Image (cartoon, rainbow, N blue to C red; front, side, top):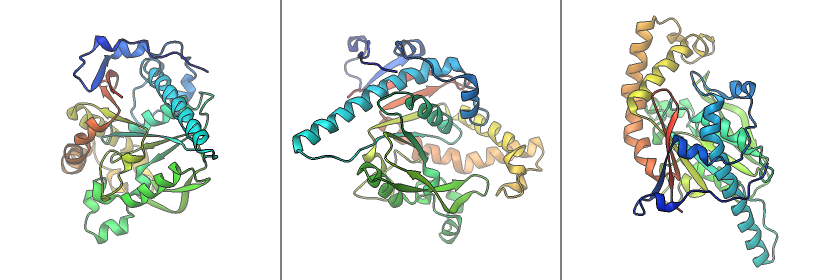
Length: 320
């Protein structure tokens, strides 16, 4: 797969005073150009998240143009590193291109990240694409309980931001191996003695609620290490409904696991489950979205806006 052509869109079509170029779905889809669709339905089935309504048409219209754009960006950045190394007369370590993906709980970040990872890995210039999530950088439950913030899990203070920044710093410095912690959504906690191993990839995708927030560090932010960032946006009422639907599905699946932290929710009636999910949304996830996540939206390089049916209807690209 190769693409040497520039984006064929005239900036004069847009408001010159705006910081962003705005595309409706059809306009964005045209920027796919000749990029081939390398995913098939079995691949997509494996990548879909719970209750995600995404099909190959959505991949072609939304993800392929983004894949093409990022391929151009990654290639240009790789060339810049080579030029710098030539100038310095030294061999520079391999420096991964880092992409951050932010957005609310239940907005579809994980599925978006997995599909983007699969597509980017098909480009010959950057075949090794790793994916890590900020869930692994949550403080362990015993720490949250000691600090009295177990009910604030997912809020900025519940993350070990310094450790996340350290891991990103090591990845960006070109270290041959970097270990990242692993989180289990079954036991709802960090998994001891288990790690995601990052070994000199071409691209790293970091997905999570807090990737565009400043966190605890006063000198370094997580986003300092991003080459590109994406915010997945939708109306809060729609995200809340998606969260309730996901909760109901989990009640019939993951919550049934005897080891599940949420095993007590498995026997709820439909009405009880809906009331519980909406209560969690009001007290935790919705509050976190409004106070901490949504305010970071404009910091993203790209904003992807979803409709009620999960389909993307607008994309906004920040000008360079």
